[in-house]
Every structure is written in structure tokens, then in C-alpha cells.
Amino acid sequence: MGWFSRKTDDTGPDNVISSRVVGIEELFLSGQFRPAAVQRDYQWTIDQSERLRRELTDAMSALQLADDDGVADIDGSDVLPEDQEDELAEDDEIGLPDEISETGAVSPKAMAVFYIGAIILRPVAAGQYEIFDGLQRLTTLTILLAVLRDLLKKGPVKKRLEAVITDGGQNFRLTHAGKDRSLVTLVQKAGEAKKVRYFRSAPDSDSGKRIFDVQREYARHLKNWPIEQLESFAKFIFDHVQVSVIEIADKRLARHTFVATNLYGLPLRRDEVFKGQLIALAQDDEQAKQIEGVWNAVRLKVGDRFEEFLICCDMIERRQPQGADCLGDLIDHLEGRAAKGEILSWLGVLTSYADAWAKLVDYLKYPHGDPLGNHIWRLSFFKWRDWMPLALHWMERHRAFKGTEKARRAQYGRTLGRFAQLHRRCMAITIYHYNL
Image (cartoon, one colour):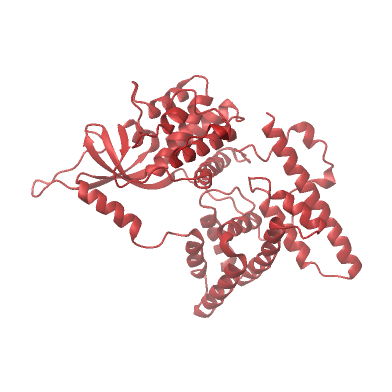
């Protein structure tokens, strides 16, 4: 009996819904998958696919950090070659200043499992399933695993990757509906997923273009990773990433479950979850009202990029790798501050960072002829956002500075120098990795 086998009850009909948590490798090896009629074409853009990749790499980095008791920079995007590092004088080093988080930061225990939600499947034959919910994630994972497969030369990890793409013959594990064959030609066919193609070769269909974009972005990003890092990433996905599989035999019930899952309720926002957990740290009702009031004011100042703002503040506060559950780790950290009666003072700092964020984002859109704005605006050309916490902290320190006119001019000069150096560092990192 397979892992999707249904249970029966001697006193009643077969159970029509069953579920189980499985690993990604076990899921793909269970058979072949095709979208049900209710499923949309592939809709994920680079934003959604990169978020998944980034959260996976962050989770693996945190796990390596816990195992090695050291800093593991899995992306390699923040590391300069030794010869370029030596060019920087000791007094020009870029890093989060010592005054950040005087309370200290405790490294959280890394999560051994990375959970990517539930998918809904209906068995149609032995080893064949219709996907009623989860097509976007399964397609994106197929693209990611195929890129890893093609970048590896040989070995047992490559064989495991090959096995989750094809069933050992000519059949692919995942197929898309319709005439568009972009998933096959750009991804699943051996040797194709590692190619960084020109944009003019993109398919005509909207779904095909999105597959093209995601495959190209994954291949561009991963092609410079060393073999050991690629293998570690693949093994992390196989051994630590899990999904809940909901199997429903009845087609109408499967369709209804898909609709109910996606129709009722509002999409879950991590910042709203964080808000509820933060208010729960209040010592009494009065403090809870104060926390909510400050939170709402900060939320209004920051605007649409609020979750990104919170993640930057977490990096400043804890100075730890940003994993998928970094906001949950921040709440754990703030429990210690709340026990000392420091939660309102932390919210005061958050308010100051919100003011700095508004100015920083304004400069990123348009520099207004300000030399400082020019350096910050240039940072907007770098797609990765690892510089954001540091830029936010400097902007907050700059805006909070008090003193004479002469002292303020000196402070402006120091801030200008910091951002000029940060821009040069980001450019050096980018050029180095693009030229590998």
C-alpha cells in the first residue's frame, strides 16, 4: 500500500478525505501529476519564485549555522573575493555598528523541517494524480530541482534529482495541461534547465513566459555556486522540506475543497500575525492599547512594504540570519525584553526606524539632487536586498543626530561616506559574481 492509500472503516463507507505529511522527494516519487480542470495555468512570477528560493536557502543557512556554530552564507551574494576584501582599510569596514541591540541577541534553534503548506490531490489511477491545489508550488519546485540536476555533473545527488523529474522512462512526473510545452522544453528535458537564455527567445504564451522567467532567474542565480553547495541545497530540499498531502477520491468534493480553501477568508499576512503576538506580550490591557496604537501609526508610516521593513528591523535587533520564520524568532527575542519592561522602548525605536524608512524609500525612488540621495538611489539597481538593514540603520542614526550646525555637517559627511562605500561594495560584489 502506498502512502496515499485510503483507510476503510468496517462500519461505514471509505473515508473520502485522508492526509499525510511527506517529504518533497517522497511526493514526486509517488507517481505522475497533472492539473485538474479547476487549476489555473502557471501564475507565479519571479517575485513569488524568488521568495520561495530565498526562504529555502535562508532555512538551510540557519540549519548549517546551528550545525557548524558559525556563519554560513549560502547565497554567496555577500562575499567579496579575498583580493578585493584586502583593498578595504580596517576603519572602512562595513557592518552593523556595535550600538545596535544592546540587549544582545541569542541565536534561535534552527528548524529541522521547512513546511510549504498543503496540496490537494485526487487519485485517478495507480500512481497518477490530479492536482486540485498546489500546482504553482509543484511547478516551481520542479524548475528549481531541474536547474540543480543540470548544474551537477554526476553522482548520487544528481540521480535523485533525475528521479523526481522523470519516472525512469520517458514520462515526466509533472505535466501541464494545454498545448504549451514550455515546462518540457525549457525545464524537464535534460540539459535545458541550466541555460540562461536571451529574453527574445521567450515563449509566446503567458504561462510559458513565466516558466521562462523563473527558470532563467534560477539558472542565473545558481550557476556560480560550487558543486558542494548545489548538492547540499538539493539534499536539504529532499531531507528537510515537507508538505501536507490531502487526498480526496471524489472529484466533486476535491473541487469543493479547492474552492473552499481559496475562497473563504483573507490571505494570511505575516505582519498581522506578528502584531497579534506582540500585543500578547503586553503586561496589561492599557499597555496592549499602547502597543496597538504605536503599531498602527508605524504601519501607516511605512505603507505597503511593511513586512520587508519588519525583517530589516529584525536584522538590526537580533543580528542573525534571516530565516523563513525570522519574525517568529524576533517575537521570541522580544519576550526577553518584555520581561524587563522594555517593549514600549523598543516600539519607540521602531517608530524612529519607520521615519527613516520613509525617507530611505523616498530616496530610492528619486534622489532629489541630494548627494546622499544619489548614493542611496544607486542601491535600487541591486536586486538583492541584503544592504537594506544597514542602510536603514544609518539613515535612522543620521536623522536622529542632534548637535550644532557644524556637528550636523560633520555627521552628514560621515553618513555620505558610509553610503558611498556601501554602494561601491555592492557594485564590487555584483560585478564579481556576474563575472564568475
